[in-house]
Length: 365
Image (cartoon, rainbow, N blue to C red; front, side, top):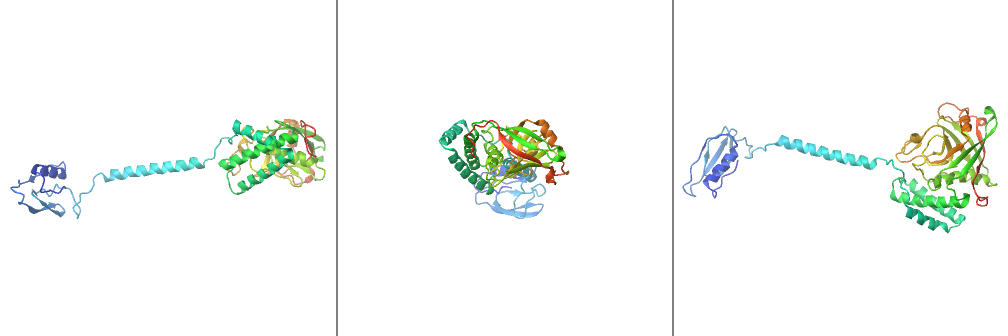
């Protein structure tokens, strides 16, 4: 209810009084002041008692229709419930937006890793073209250490900008080293010579695989060829390999030799997924153990699989000949479950791995 003031007109005071009483009809008895000095202390009476005393020039006798006031003379604010509902809805909407933003930020990306632009790839080719094989190998070794250190520090290699740039340079150097050591590629055909155990006939067989292009999976291809080919051809190293697991969805093999190295990071490209009859590295980080997928493992071994939100097994080759040999390997005696062969006599031994299209003289002995 507005307080009357002495310096306003009688009509204005009457309008203010009417607005304060609301739209209800009220009996208001007012007297026009005769002089400015004719003022008195008037008590406004409500149904709750005397609300407040104001200095004014009118008398109001409508205790039943005046709005309820508190002890301090303030009228309760109307529309409180409506404001409360609006504020609650606004707060809920804001919370929903924040939660949605956090989920989108943490959601792993299903896109393939960012590829180097043609300009960057050309610059890298020019940068490494003048290096000899020994210099390229030293460069790959240094960059490998940096990548391993970054990964061990907890960096998400698939999304971190610095990690993407480092792995791009590392992959370019690995590609140049492959071309200098095994030939220009872009792919390599490799013959895997096998010997079945006596329980499976004791006969030899051969499976031919073709690696992924060296500009797509250079690091994984380099790890495989270094472990399976280069280490085996060095006479001072004891090299052995065999298929020792038949898990139903994969046929897994180990490769053993001194100073063998696996993957520095989980290199993966969506253009070379884990389809049936492809080769991939086992483990996180993977290698040098590898497996042959006997079913489509794109979902089981792809990005976001096996407890990781971003990583995937590296897929680096596919079988192009010897599919009947692979189907025969699936009958290898192995216990149910994980499928690891307990009897070494049932291992399918790998006698050798030979590159079929490398240039003589380029492979170091």
